[in-house]
Image (cartoon, rainbow, N blue to C red; front, side):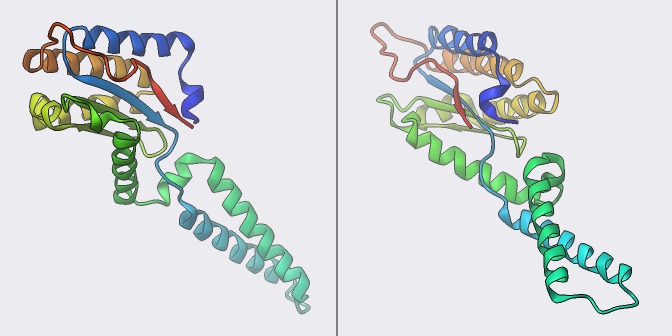
Length: 212
């Protein structure tokens, strides 16, 4: 599931409209980012590939009980199984998630969120009010990061609530609805503690960032 293919133009417009509406009431800068994946999992692909190669080799041995296996034939079957396993895992997310640890997926999502927090300048606003809502589709992990004043305004409970809302939306297959709901909730909480003042400048574009 590629992040660039998940949202229709109307859904992108709804998310970006929610950002504009929320920021009309708060000095905070809210940036939603959706990534296809937060990292590669080549080790899991290699493990499945090796197992498929070994099983293919064993199957070949059982089918040739009356004669010795030719070295070239054995290697060919093994590497075909290796390629099949790696290719299958690369295209089948549920199996790939099964062979990767939850802790590893969460760690990679958090690391990716921190990189994006600075690369998208969310952590460099003049008022220290940037808020990142990060969804990683493959990992099914959401991360909420906020700069100094944004974090104070949200509070740990507020940030955790937004994260849970985003995760639930991914599980239901409704990331757009989850983002709109999270942006609205964040906007309400931030507006109460960081209200928009006259002359406030919109430092970051009101857009949905998609990383394929």
